[in-house]
Length: 184
Image (cartoon, rainbow, N blue to C red):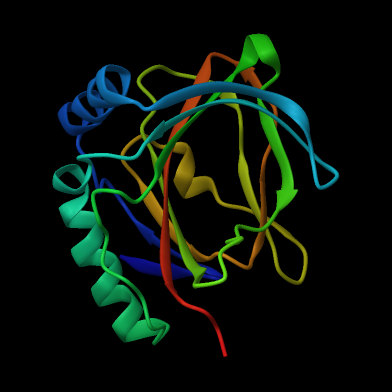
């Protein structure tokens, strides 16, 4: 694990066999599959979104332990443990749809909790081109580490970020939001 500017990066968090199992699990057990090609709060996004809301905790135990430790050492947020009912997103950016997601932040609409950290893992199973992930802090910063399947990054959810257009193939990322009580 290493700090890279405004994010934390972990190389090869998942191995190829684990990536394959995660994708198979999502394909067999998702609650919802929706194709998103619209404007949400003025930000253009084109992706297929697979949402799993049940029995995913066993797949994410290593992520939970990692983010809990990471949070204690680096952020100090009051966060909730991951539960089976927490949503996990599989974002599929397909070149045929010019998949992308423009600048945005991750936030909760809840009156009870806020989204504190965003965990992203590249779980692509085939080569793709484009689809670079960028952060915006004091300028745009491409996060090249997220281009490799198995790699994981953690960002503060309030950081502006985007995914550029996928020009060839499909880019697949797993997204987990780490929530906690409302900021005060």
